[in-house]
Length: 492
Image (cartoon, rainbow, N blue to C red; front, side, top):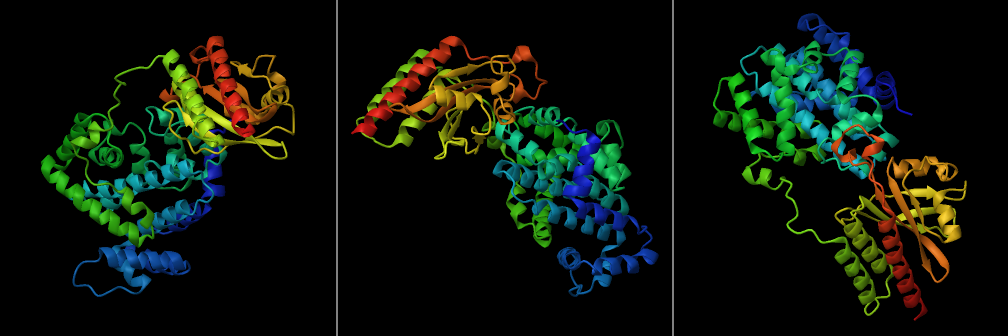
């Protein structure tokens, strides 16, 4: 069941990231009046050894030349000022809490680390963009840019099975990925950011930046531009002109040339990598990328394939490949991978998988998965088949293939478990038994998802791509040929 915005905020703020909530509430008790608040804030920080250590590392990293090494929290707060100290504490707790996320799917972890690096760099870039403003504004702009994408970052850290499923099903580099995720979780990342900022009683400037930032003051625009710039540097898009236009907008606000801006961006990158080490976030350092060049945009352009091989030629090649393997190999894995790759190419399946039957026949586990480009997908999927009658167990028991274009149809309604609903995910599924002789060892699955799932558009039943009867029969013939090959090599 989809959660509401309020439920997500409650989960993130009080269950998954309580340390950030606790720190934000502690910092909120101290006003920005340095004279009265600094001693009390220093005392509060001393109770947190990790926070104290981080503060000293940061102050010694950024201190002016000529100053002796700072060894006490009280001295650090005086040198930095109360607003900077607050930002350091919140940044440290944010980094520590997010880096501590355990047992994440490797795709989720990768996404989370890049978002964290982008956010930290955005904060530094935003501060760089307002050199002529007061220290107070610079610190507020830094914090606002740092937390501009906190809703998305917090989701990947705390989303659990929702995050895992989205990372497994959809390529995070696909256009519209963010919009698709928002549709699936029942809220937007922007709303999550707004809710968390309100819960933590943080910057009003950030709330303004989350609401039509391009139509507001230069300070608010700076936050939006900094977030956009850090993301564009980390992952240059297809259009270099758009990136150059962004640089021109930023240079105009700063009243400098684009060339001067590029120099300042590189200097800021060096500062960001140094500070990340002070925060104990060395894992993020390499994710702060250098300024992109023209070739970075060129390689991200999506070119259409020069030649499209017909399905008939691809199928013929698949049969030949399996037959030729019999002359050189007895490795079952080679046969299975060959059949899966060729099936993905011939039928353009978005996912083509082999699930192996466990020794106790209680479940099937994904052994190989390939995408529509016949590229390896290391996703691990386990589906129970002994707890209740379901489509996969029925195929294995009957040794007959199944074509499921609509799992809600009464033919399948009693054979679709919650695990299979998540696996099919509003798509079409072909299940064919893989056998050695008469003994089934698993199933091969070919899948389509809705046409719009990778574009981030709202799902509509009419957009779903079905598996045609003709394609299903041809796929069954190919797998029967695979079964024959497997049987023969095991009889040698």
